[in-house]
Amino acid sequence: MLLNNALKQQSTPVTTSVYPSNRFSIAPMLDWTDRHCRYFHRVMSKNTLLYSEMVTTGAILYGKGDYLRKDDAEHPVCLQLGGFAAADLARSALAGKERGYDEINLNVGCPSDRVQNGRFGACLMAEADLVGDAVKAMQDATGLPVSVKTRIGIDDLDSYEFLCDFVRTVADKGCDTFIVHARKAWLSGLSPKQNRDIPPLDYERVYQLKKDFPQLTIAINGGIKTLDECETHLQYLDGVMLGREVYANPYLLSSVDQRLFGDQSTILSRFEVLEKMYPYIEQQLSDGAYLNHIVRHMLGLFQGVPGARAWRRHLSENAHISGSGIEVVQKAASLVIES
Image (cartoon, rainbow, N blue to C red):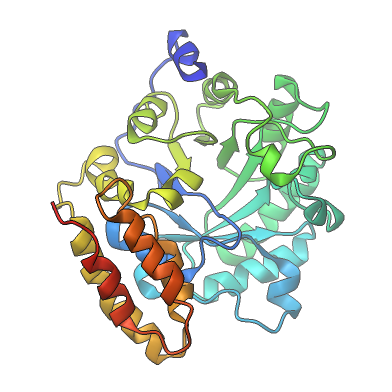
């Protein structure tokens, strides 16, 4: 309904001769878009911009884990950072550049209490100057494109004027790309999950933002489920970001390059996608990875295909067992009826 209402407005379609990197991207999702997930997604689309999970500056600068590990096959890939101190963000962005990330993104959209307590995420919408200074520091340190992922507002700061002031202030410091989740965020009273569903979507506001800031790259996120919807949004905006829908039904990525990027490469079948994953799985297992850490991202590959439930069940029941290998995946695949 909201999308249909937006279409009734006489917005001016966006025309671009060169696709921006954010034309289609997969949202950074905590515990989901790790390196194994990104590799799997890349098999199906070579043009989609992939995002890391949000990584805090504290984890990068002071943590003991390798939070920046990635595979060379993931390009183009963006590192999303969480933080507020310009100096720490600059050091973290530089670490990301040194590890081969193509872009940096600052999280100004996450509404969780834990994030707020660390003074980053959606609460930073109330501190536009701080966000702008952080973006400039990261750009100066790395020379990489730096974008901001934000909401349309927070709490009672949800007027269109507030959103414009935020974007204008940050853009004046050098940011030219904004990914806008078309919902406001309630910083208290709603859980992060509820903040993904309860605040109403307002696609029209993001469309208007592009009209008022035509020089900026504006991508939209929130509630988008199909490539048809993506094509509609791309008539008015520069980019579309999908999250949970891609994770639940990853095979929709197989058509992205043709439909959204004009790339006429052959679309892989689901079984061809799986075949291309086998060498990666075997290499990761030999390096000490656990099978379930890889295949948990692949459970939706056969969504809607006869045998999909048996595929999911076999992987879920066996991939976590110590010593599980590629044979578990092959057995699960044999339970799917190939059309």
